[in-house]
Length: 310
Image (cartoon, rainbow, N blue to C red; front, side, top):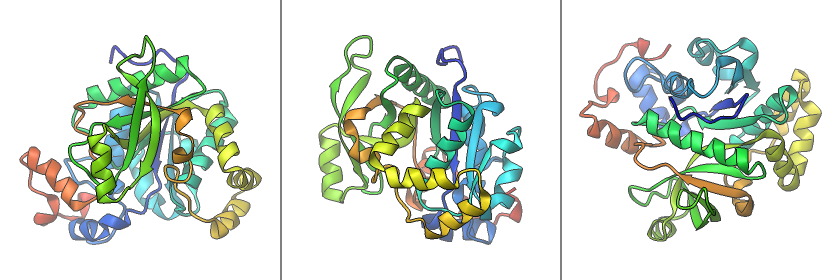
């Protein structure tokens, strides 16, 4: 792409640590056992993880890409990582929601390049327009290059109120050169009730894609301010597998959006990502909606061999 960010040494981080509990019945029907959807081939010959890695490849070389996965999913994950160097797979002992997995990944990246800029991507989402999506990501990276104290979120204009998603409520646009494209954040809402979701959509709220760009040291500074105990415990176990395993056994799960981002709206900006065809594919209904637009038969309605996973 010609409009990639002019930021030397950009890193990408792919989050593949989810257990996919909401879609276990669906993946069982497809491949005969419940597996996280990011490792399942729901569309074409690639899994969602493989598709994500291919989609973001123009942004950073494999040497500058990290993937975080759970120890009990390594048999599924490793064959799908392509050219990723073995040392760039961040292994967490188990899933403790998005907070610990992201924190562990950021400490791994900080040990290599603490002032690096990074773009973060879930591994299990669908995007129809990869070019438009990457253009929006590139724009977010440019924003934090100019404003390194901010976290730039990718906001998706909602197609309908959905209480299963997070919402970013924009406020004033940033001054030129960002005016009309990048907005300050008034508030951040993780999975509001249906009435609140409808109200947010009516006020111009955007879906939280959980795609974001920031400078690593700035994010760790913000995490220390809001979640200092979690950061201190993770730092104490970092680089020591036995200590990390013991920590995870006692670690309370925490959600990066609800328990952290929602508490720092003044530190966030949101970049609108229009007409990308984004969906989090978090429910069978959302997957069916996408497949319907593609005139595709849902894979759970046909008999598939076990090759549906790698």
